[in-house]
Image 1 (cartoon, rainbow, N blue to C red):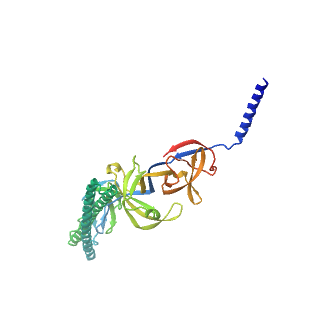
Image 2 (image 1 turned 45 degrees about the vertical axis):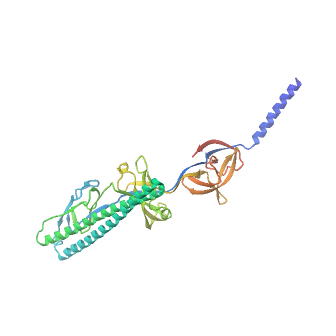
Image 3 (image 1 turned 120 degrees about the vertical axis):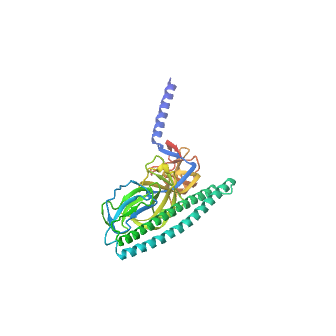
Length: 402
């Protein structure tokens, strides 16, 4: 009986001493971790963009005249050759010799511009034909393994770009022909009025099929030569303009893949950079900071039926994919912190925190490429703070994988 009592007292003493020791031991810190893995990764530059009709036609008054009120509104459909306005002559403005001589000079200038546009179209056609042949040749060589997928994609991108340039050159011919027609109209009606054929009105017609984008001269009144009356264009021929910081623009090249988001649709749109303008401009940011920016022009490559509701000057977000890889070791950027000029993470190994220095390659908004210091399967602490110390016991309360 006495021995049993001693045994009970001994057990109680051991429990009390153990409780005291445990109370003074460092408590395990609660951490959330992410498992390092291998997978695809992209690095992008993001900025706001605007859609823009590629070919805008500003219909102007060919002569000094009196314009009636235009019966058009933004969004109205027009056809090529449709009369947009009938200009009434203003005697004696359309009868003097100087006006007639100026009309002759404008006609000569318009014909020269038409010839230049035709020459540019021939050059664009030759380039487009060559690019298409190169693409077809590359596709055939792709089947034999002589050409890589990247080279085939580049040939396809070049063929599309030259096809777009050819379409633009052909549109420029239409514009030049319209200018010639406008100049001939000015000369013909000036001459006719000089021959006492007054009272005849000058029709102003639409150069292309499209819709009205802007009514520049809504109300009736006197108009001067080359004064804008109405702007028309094809809303299905859209491009995207983005003004990037010049330090970001140098990382973007023609052919760079672009993902267009927040445009109003359910799925992102695909695009390709057509041109990075070589001249920057100064812009004051919302914070009053002076910035140097450059325009980047993007072609929408997704099927037109997917973005048919987009219009001119609509807002969207452009993501320029400046680097991508199909299989890299990656870690969330939220797990990284600076230590003595290097990148480091807090890993969890054997229930304790371990600080590891890592070598980082490309960095994106969400992930960073790991070149050395971590392996797939390692658990790293996300959002480490100053309260965590290497060697601390760690208790994982949340674990995610990427």
